[in-house]
Amino acid sequence: MDKSVEIDVDFALSYKKEQGRVLNLAWVLPRPKRDHYKGGFPLWFEEKLLRFFGIDLKDMAKDEVIQLFSGMTKYGFRVDLSKEVKPDLICDCHKLPKEWNNRWDIAICDPPYNDEYSKKLYGTGKIKYKDYISEAVRIVEPGGFICSYHWAMTPRPDGTDLIARIFVGTRTWHKPRICNIYQKHKKMKPNPSNNTQQID
Image (cartoon, rainbow, N blue to C red; front, side, top):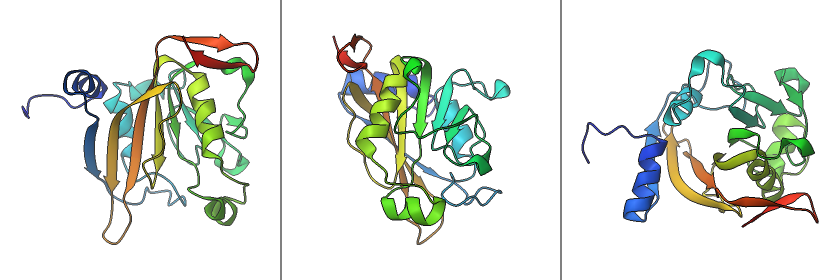
């Protein structure tokens, strides 16, 4: 690979189109962030991910990026059930406002990875991947992106294509995480029967 090539979302899309394959990247980052928030992103992950999408960090990206299960994240419009983390909206990410259809450029999902973690670490209820990821797809504009940060390669949501995986390593003896990046199909239309969207 030409070392002068910038590895960003445009490169990932071109790679998928020309090679017919998903781009796989590996980032090794410090751990943890200075706030030591349980379950938070590794140090610099947010900044590096948003730069991958070409987001200008100076304006905090609140009109472009939404962070679901935000915790102590710094950028974007932050949604969480916990008032202690001072989100922009206190809300269950399994059921977001109906008027948010096709609103955001990028949705980043970093939920508790299972029901035990949800209850033990945050005192919250069951985590339903299909429900929250469908909501993330709904609120992202056609052609926009959904980032699913997890300890597994999560299933591709309906109405999207997988374009990249970022494997995130931190310290020795710690499991890596995977940021699965999906692009919402550009041709979508409302489904009036259930207020969702379907592929045109």
